[in-house]
Length: 228
Image 1 (tube, rainbow, N blue to C red):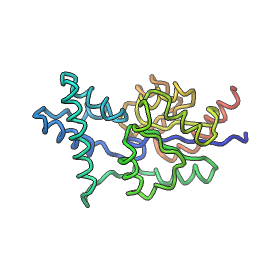
Image 2 (cartoon, rainbow, N blue to C red):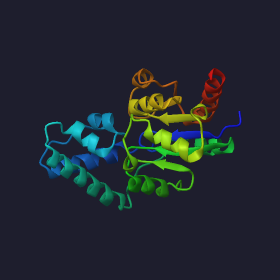
Image 3 (cartoon, rainbow, N blue to C red):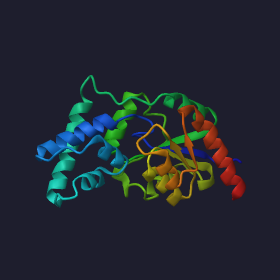
């Protein structure tokens, strides 16, 4: 097995715990339009989708103009919050160690996220991870999840084949994207969708701890290779 190995990670809910920041920004955006803030459970349901799609889901009765204002208000609030010294979007426990282990074992790392490129770069720079990923696929680049485009572009950028690629994420959108790209999906149990939803969406396995990710990635690559 000599192919280039590629591990594609989601960001929010997989690498970083951003749910409370996202919910706060969404609440501020809705308040700017004198709308009741969506609950955190509703916000968790849409994390991972492109922002306009999140807003459309959370404000289904709003017209296009109001939704556009909500999107811009959210972006403005997030930008402001990100400048505060107390801004907190922590890495999940074990994330850095798992990335280290994957790189040591020869995997190239990529990200496929519903975040904007600006937002993603801000998170990666804050955690000193900006140079760890060879491909950054964001909501700015084309159709969002579960469209397979982000994974396909990451594979094209690195030269990795589907049999040598895995997708690691916490939502059913991530797992459906993996299925659509014909790569194994490794779901994580610490994110924003329940394990049974992840399996129903096509997850090959659900990891309980970040330390499991390198071994699961290698195992599922071997399984796909042997089946092909």
